[in-house]
Image 1: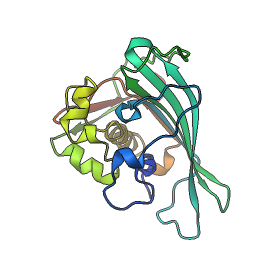
Image 2 (image 1 turned 120 degrees about the vertical axis):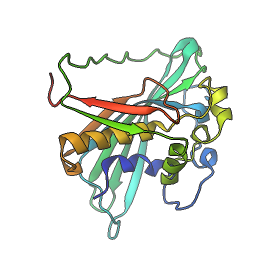
Image 3 (image 1 turned 60 degrees about the vertical axis):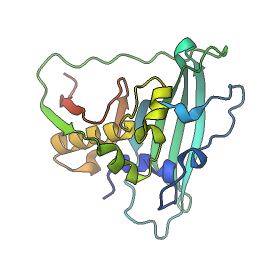
Amino acid sequence: MVFPTYLLILPFKLADQEVIEFYGQNASNTIPGAPDLALRYAVDGQRDLTIHKPLPTASTGSKFQLRNKVIGIYDKGSAGSSFDTEQKIVDTVTGEVYTTTRSVSFVPKQGNWGGPRGPTMPLYHFPSRAPDATYEVQTTDNTVFLYRLNGDYNPPHAVPYPGLKMGLGGVIIHGLFTYSSTCYGIVSKIFAGDAGRLKFFGARFAFTVRPGDKLTTTMVDGYG
């Protein structure tokens, strides 16, 4: 089966099978009432993935459509701006919705344009008891280059300049790599490798991950 988080890459490369010119492919339309933000410098803030139906391994007999909607764009002052979007993958032949992704992206240093502050994100606290499982991933200098072959060719994950301009210190690892590897760890440890049991996965991006960092996911099975 298709691992659920793979679909998050599809909006980047669409139907292309070759290396894409990322900024041109992912150019955004102007959002009414919002400033002209340099969205090429946007980073992940949060992603919530709902799986209504597993994606098939082949599209024969189906006609899939990616439907995008802007939920809101918010002024976070001197820190920057955030925008909230929703994407659905729909089979237009049957009308079935396969997945819904709600994403919050952040554009550093592009705020103070007089817009609404937007909702405050709730804080989540890890239970005080010992975790039921842990999963570790050791990244290397090659991690960014291997992951980008999925279709996310965003330059900050390959060359230093964009990350330096954004104040991130240079090359950073794809947020979707962190997201997907964490999800894989949970499926492996909690669901015994059965990705079909996953119905929802959400995560917030709070820190920058760099090549060479070790990622450790600690898990509690239940609510405490």
